[in-house]
Image 1 (cartoon, rainbow, N blue to C red):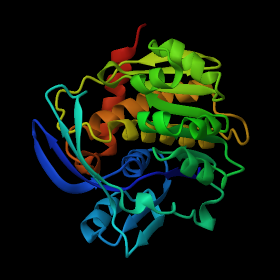
Image 2 (spheres, one colour):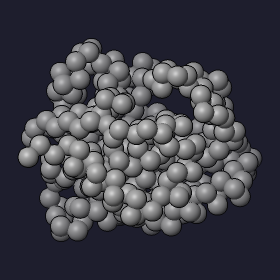
Image 3 (tube, helix red, strand yellow):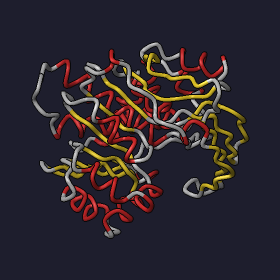
Image 4 (cartoon, rainbow, N blue to C red):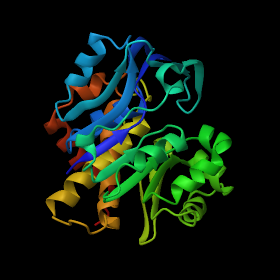
Amino acid sequence: MPLIVTGTIGIDTIETPYGKAEQVLGGSCTYFAAAASFFAPVRMVAAVGGDFDDHARTTLARFPNVCVQGLETRNGSKTFAWGGKYHEDWNVRETLFTELGVLAEAPPMTPQEYRDSRYVFLANSHPSVQADLLSGFPDRTIAVVDTMDLWIDTARVELLALLRQVDGVVLNDQEAALLTGHPNPLTAGKAILDLGPTFAVIKKGEHGCLLVHRDGVAALPAYPTETVHDPTGAGDSFGGGLMGHIARTHAEQHFGDEPVTFEMIRQGLAYGTVIASFTVEAFSLDRLAKLTKQELEDRLAAFKELVRLD
């Protein structure tokens, strides 16, 4: 069940009402891979600089299902760095600094051994970079892309071209509105399908998520988490849980070349929601690094009971 993710690995400095964490491991690729690893083996393609230290590598090593053969170290460069500050309203985030480092250079190469990957997730990066990496997986079963307002504003042409090549897109409600011009998430989701994808997953923060698929519509609430210390990476962790479930389920049920079904994606929303609820309980990957499979299964069971109607 080869699942692959490509995106950013970063060194973050985060301030929240609960404290501050300096130079901790972050990045879209990092959070996705850590979350997905609870459900399926995941391959990582990303670049870091020579300042990517042993502590960061040790943190990644705590997730044994993550293969880092595609982690490219550039000794003469610096790792992407980002600083952010959250306020009492978790939806308000202030960017303190951004240092592109290796992100200003050529994207990393995908190892030849990864070319048989069937489940592809393009974590947030420039659409042209995502498209180039996607071209290396002609035999993929499913490809899903994450994007953001920056690319919708500055690289719309490239993004629209990419959307015609992928099966699904993950973005938040504000980004969906910006992309389509429709403030209503359902209307925006339907408009996104007209751009090419088979489905769109629209994240709504503490209000849950919405799946708009050619075969139907589904919605889930967020898990009611009491302890929120750092929301950084929650969306990427959600994507990891979603795709990890899809890769595991599709492979285990021997679907072969059959497409991923609406029901698999719908179920994946629950796995993504629950793994993200753990991510926010601590800074960086600290909570996921301590998470046990029993804790995960218990919260999944509680969440399924929460949303059960019969």
